[in-house]
Image (cartoon, rainbow, N blue to C red; front, side, top):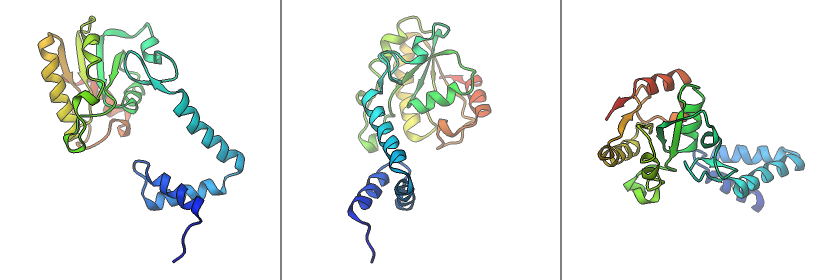
Length: 198
């Protein structure tokens, strides 16, 4: 059986560790990188290094940013009475692409998942409550309609409702088990507009 040269085998193994990348995809990506010029490969490596060096969490909402505050939190035109809770930055981006929602966000950086030993204290939940107490009138729970998303939604709703804030959940025009960042804009607009109080 033919084996990869050690540096190529290492690259394939590292690429395979990426989410959604199986052995065949990792192999295809590794061979693509191998065919790139040295300069193109260097630019890819530098882009990865720059992300690890400069990207951090927004001090307010936990969105990814290269500054203290993300672009959304710096925007004075945003409605501070609405707070949309999402699991990941990619979900925030998906909602932003609709150009329909004008409030603020809070990024949990994950979902509660007992199967994966992810507990509420491992997420950006503690940071949420001072924000809600600071004039928020509606909290929109925009979490994926998965088991983990529903678990997190119920957990948050149970802790937010006693604070006297309106708690809504986006309508599930989204497919069960689907991800927000794969939904089209019309579906997301409909889901946001038809959200319901919990």
